[in-house]
Image 1 (cartoon, rainbow, N blue to C red):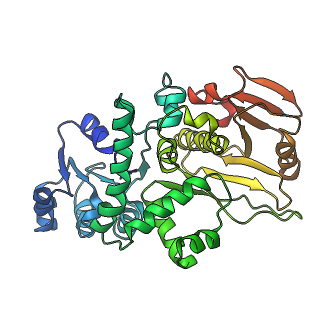
Image 2: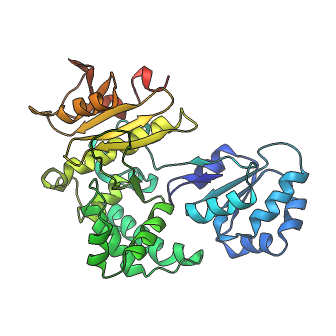
Image 3: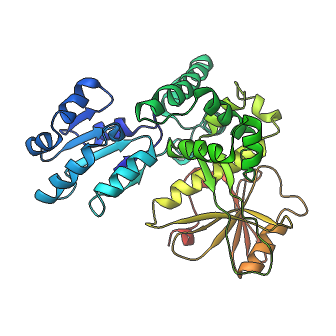
Amino acid sequence: MVGGSRQCGKTTLAHRVLRGWRHLDLERQADRGLVTADPDGFLTANPRRVVFDEAQVVPELFPALRSAVDRGKGKGRYVLLGSVSPRLVKAAGESLAGRVGLLELSPFLCSEVPTRGDERWFWGGYPTVLASRRRADRVDWFDAYVRTFVERDLAAIGLRVAPSRLRALLQMLSHVHGHLLNMSDLARSLGVSVPTVSHHLEVLEGGFLVRRLAPHFANLQKRLTKSPKVYVRDSGLLHHLAGLREQKQLEAWPGRGRSFEGLVIEELIQQLSLGSSSPYFAFWRTQAGAEVDFLFDVGNGLVPVEIKWGPLGRDGTKGLLSCMQDLHLRRGYVVTASIDEAWDMGNGITVLPWRQIAAGELPRDWNR
């Protein structure tokens, strides 16, 4: 089962990799009718090599798939694609437990389009956006993308959310991107209850548009932050929601540093997830304000990473050193766009250039 945001490339990937397979788009009435008329009969007649695109639209498909998988032979007989995670994962978990593998596909990573540089940062990784050369076409695409998600996609799977409210929430999230999530503030601004905002955030996370990064908890005497941080996952969508329409606007935007932080975190999460079956991602922050932007474990112990767009400054590694001391970590890293080569700063800290991470060149011991 392959999940990911709409238009990130799932269908294109499936057509290119699974040549000779039958591909059904379950959002098309004709294709959906082939399955819904008699799911068991359809799967009996088509026992293998079928791709079901937007599978969450037909929940009755999943119990039929369970029976078909159990009575058939061989692995990898069907592939499910979906762009609204909770509905898809819930259906798969209930009906296909132990019978399905999960893979998340993101928009293009920086390491997958390394020649794009700052263009990839500003415009994000959606294939259609990067393939367009006219700024107006890119802006129009993002307008249509948000409109389609909030007005059509959610209604198609039975989620009743007011489109205007969800659009307003997305815009608010672009302004608190990289900050601690304050549900009460969002609820007050929208004029709704905290449970309603919580539900809306789950919807946005399920559509792979937003990420909540959890704080790391440890058995320490220090009081640690309990609130997650929130990020708009694609940097291009973030900038569009914040009202930026051309690349030069990013230079003066107050949120530029937080945008860069989110860019690096999303890149690292996707790259590190490829080499681990159960990766752990978090951030570290005490209530006194000491913080490390990103903390991960892909099987070799915790690794703290501080992220800086500009020069480190006098206290640039203060939070990192505090984290390393409290968690008894021997190594720490800073990722910054202000240098072109890696440097050892002493005290177990290595400074890495962003260009190295963006090229997919992670330190060897990270994935070991």
